[in-house]
Length: 146
Image (cartoon, rainbow, N blue to C red; front, side, top):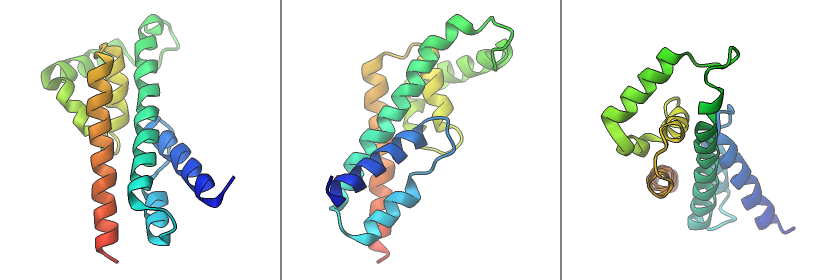
């Protein structure tokens, strides 16, 4: 595997993990790779965006499956917290997925979208826009500062 392929593969998996509920941050990796200058910035943004969007898709899938376990004693969310999440999502709707890039609230939003059965095409489109926009802005700031 070439250095570029290894770099892109690593970035993909870090971005994928960052979109999950795992405590992983892809931004420092992207910034480091941008500053190293060995790979075209557009390619780094594309790989990070795809990885991060697919990671959010895992959250969505978990949300789709969570309903069957919600009445179990070990289920981690109370009925009240699920109701609050449903109400919030119904109030703001699918457009709230444009905040899926945000720390703390982004990952739970993608999970709630799955629970509430947001149509998959609109989910992917809005999440991909949000994730890509974040990486584009981060890239412009990083490269503009050098």
